[in-house]
Length: 87
Image (tube, rainbow, N blue to C red; front, top):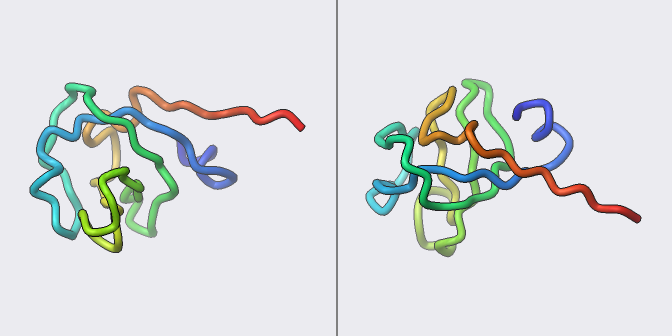
């Protein structure tokens, strides 16, 4: 997914069961039960995933974003959807 995100964001399916409690920092308290879709927009120098959620700008950190621990946290790598747009 890192290679794709370098050029464009991608839609991913995740386990967001515990996300309502997220208010900042790096999140890792989740499982693998897919129940939500978000936009993966990048990763930082610590390889933490940066995701944009759809719950509004008052949720999470930095106006609607969540930072996930590196790896397949919340099953973020299980379902990656890249959209091909033809011109």
